Length: 228
Ligand SMILES: [Mg+2]
Image (cartoon, rainbow, N blue to C red):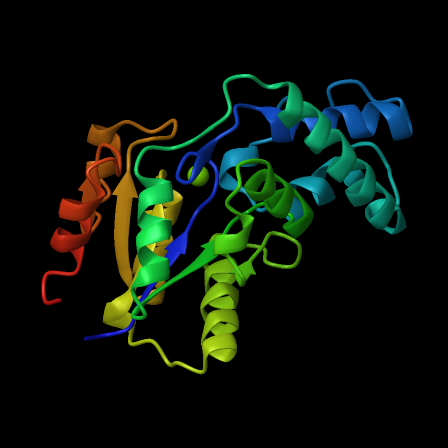
C-alpha cells in the first residue's frame, strides 16, 4: 500500500469559525494602536496572514518590531472570540477521517494554511483537532499558499522519514487558492464546498476531486485512494 499525505486547509475545510480571526485582529489593533476596524477591507481569505499584516503596518505607519506583541495579543483575542462564537464547528466527516487515519499506518495528515501558526494552533485546539497535526506550514513566513504547502510537506517528510510521491499528496481545501496551489506543486487537489465558495464555482477550477462535504468519508476515501 502506498503512503498518502493529506495536506489540509483549515478555515472552511476542517472547521467553520466565522470571522473570529478577523475580529480578533481588529480587537488587537484597537487595543494596541487605537485603530478601529483595521482589517475591514483586508482580503484575508486569499492572502497569507503575514502579507495582510504587512499591508496594515504600512497603512497605519506601524513598525515591524511590534509583530511579536501583536501576535501574542492576537492569540489571546482569538481564543476569546472563538470561545464566545456559538456557531463554530468541525465540518462533516473530518473527525472520522482523522480518526481513521490514526488506525491506518499509510495515511498522514498535515496543515497548509494562511493563518499565523499561533492562530492555526488555537483554532485547531478549540475544536479538539490539534493532536492530529504534528506538522504544518503556516502564514508566518510564507508569502503564498504554495510555500506553506511545501513547508508542510517537508516538515512531515522529515518527522516521519518518508518521501511522499507527488501523486500521493493531496491538497484539500475550500477555495480555488487550494486547487491552484496543488496544480502549482504538481500534486492532487481535493475541493470541498464547505466554505464560502460554491460547488459549481470550485468545479470551474478543475480539481482532481470535488465533494459537497466529507460526511460520507468512507466512500470518499475509497474514491480518492482507488488502488488500496
Ligand atoms: Mg479555506
